[in-house]
Amino acid sequence: MKKNYSEITPYIAELAQISDRNNHILPEMYTQHKVFRGLRDIDGNGVVTGLTEVSKIKAKENGQPCRGELYYRGVNVRDLVNGFLKDKRFGFEETVYLLLFSDLPDAKQLKRFSEELADFRSLPTSFVRDMILKAPGKDMMNILSRSVLGLYAYDDNPDDISVANVLRQCLQLIAVFPMLSVYGYQSYQHYHQGKSLFIHLPDPELSTAENLLRLLREDGKFSPLEARILDLALVLHAEHGGGNNSTFTTHVVTSSGTDTYSAIAAALGSLKGPRHGGANIKVVRMFEDMKKSIDTENRDEVAKYLGRLLDKQAFDGAGLIYGMGHAVYSLSDPRADILMDCAKSLAVEKGFEKDYALYETVAELAPEIIASKRRMYKGVSANVDFYSGLVYQMLELPCELYTPIFATARIAGWSAHRIEEIQNAGKIIRPAYVSVKDDVKYVPLSER
Image (cartoon, rainbow, N blue to C red; front, side, top):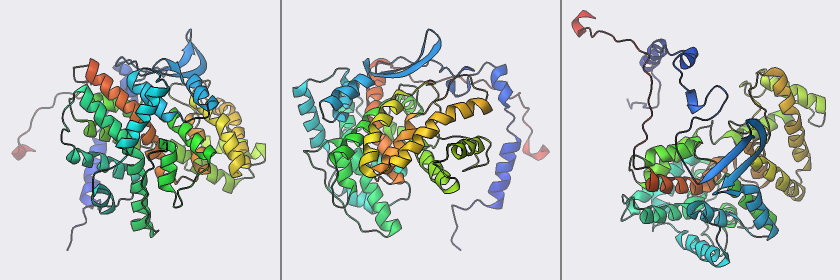
């Protein structure tokens, strides 16, 4: 009989119960030993573990909550976005340049850099066939991680961690992430969902956002507004301080001296976790449940539904209003502010005005309802995931690609932080843990 390696056998279940019984670490012990769980203190402030020039988050002023601000290499993201939107051009390539090199490029530098990324936008011969199509998976983030690790074998100099070589590797990964993500999805659709298989090649004349839509859609067509909004979403997800889980993972793994492919695969593993990269999917599904359950044009019914969410009586019973609140921001998330304003025009083009109005209603009601039911140490507002799910839905992006698209943007920030860690650290990151287990005398097997 063939062994089912995926089965949780009765013996494994019994061992799991033993493990649970022997875990004696209680929540109050973290306070007792002055350990900041999750590297955050009781007020929610992050414990400082490093220095960075890549980005900065501002959520307080003179110790008091203020309107959230995000800076890439000292440049306010609101100004960066206003700049390229005013010029009616794409901003992701400019943002990547800024994050990697700490300068805003002039027109000539931006053109050359964009052309370099376009030249890198190809995969080794037979890579798609051998690494993606021959081993289709059901999880896009796992396919993406596997593909990144697979590229190690095609690199003639994979373990050189000089800045120049790591920069070359990072630029290649930034360029091919849209292809790896979409091709992985196409293989899943074909082999697991029985859909037609089509593989488009990228167009070197198009931006990252345009190519992503071209690769994904069978006819390769998209509107200028769709491409601009997706480009904006990529810019807003490109980087968010060194303390987010996947970027911190990049620092930790890089500090060991490992190769670029392993470091980025580790970051992808972090982002795959639903506490980090899957929030916008939860937001979309929460709203789908809301529309099935109540009259969403009735403000009182919406308020009651949000109350039931917090009371664990609606949707998934988790007691959360997904998309509301952030570990750092309190009064506002600047990324949500920007995305909300730009999403309105897309809602009109796509016929999502009612959905957009519902999102606005929830964003207005949720902070008051949360404050009435929860003890909070800071304010609550809509975060970027609250609106990005709606934007991706309006762009007709499959939910399986929500997190890979996040990764397609965040690889820019990961790359900048990896290079910064190589340039400045020179020491492995090794935090301390407090042991709370008493010494136990060894008992010989025959006496147990």
